[in-house]
Length: 257
Image 1: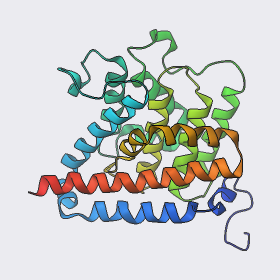
Image 2: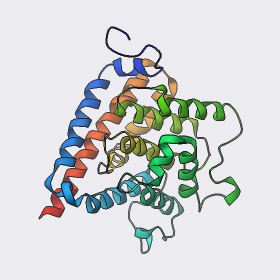
Image 3: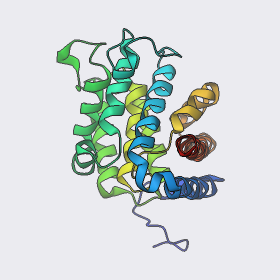
Image 4: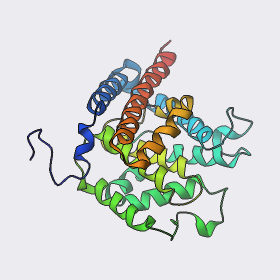
């Protein structure tokens, strides 16, 4: 162990020491805790989780070019926009937390990522391409490294891990279609599986949608690999989790009246 308690064998450990990262993560954790302790969410979380899931799907879809508003049929994924329909299918698979996909993520993250793409891109590409990463470049190697990190190769706080996985999938664009929806869903999977947001009540996607310019700039900074770029992405991700917790509280409060 190092002097600050981190594991020197953990490739992600230095990220937690970047400026502002620990504070952003701690504030996000506290805010999500408050959301889960709201009296409505103590027993009624399935309803608030369903609303959070719907808002997350719409916001994630918008970031990938989907519509700002639902049209007739969109609420159940049968609408005409393929990006939104895919995002809604992904949201349904993650809704409420401890579902089958969370279990797959914990033991075989690459299978979970492939499943997310199958759901997200079902109306965008041929069936033969669903869940199949691109064969060019070092896509396969980097995905395998990501899986190693997720299944025990990193012991950084959940907000950091969620941001790294999110940023890596965005950067890598492993499928060439629906990669943004998949990346944001993978981030959500991390927060659920880690217990940071076990019922999936937070909606960080809304924050990313509202600050789409900052989101894309920070993603480019993550891809650059510079300390400044990495810090900006990690802090923005923590801020989004915090804002997503506020969104969760607003959902709970609207259902308590």
